[in-house]
Amino acid sequence: MELGGALKFRAPAVGLTLEGNARALLGHTGDHRAWGIGGLMRVESGADGQGLAVMIAPSYGDATADPQALWDGLRAGRTPADLRARLDAKSAMACRRRAVAG
Image (cartoon, rainbow, N blue to C red; front, top):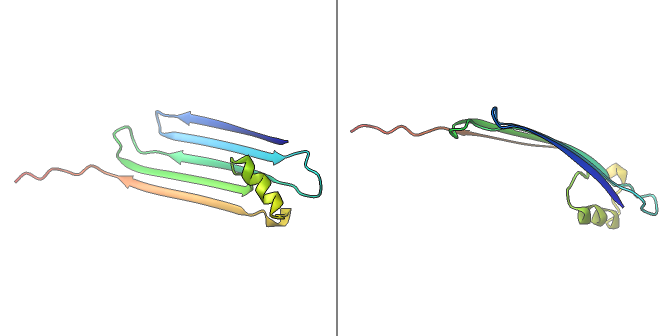
């Protein structure tokens, strides 16, 4: 059995999104444990599509949303020592091109 949960907060007026998730594989025979936690913070550019957009998503363990990947990790012999912290980050800048009178 797998247990998981997620929370999401959006504030579209300021372009902010916050997410958090956790998951664990329960009721599995043997010494295998699979779990993970993760989060996301995204700040998007303005309503006009211009400005800076930033996304930061830290995670630890197996925070994947795919239950099959959790089981595949157990079959591959992954152990708690294999758990690693990860940080994904992206940024982008959008600006409007000005027309040149000529």
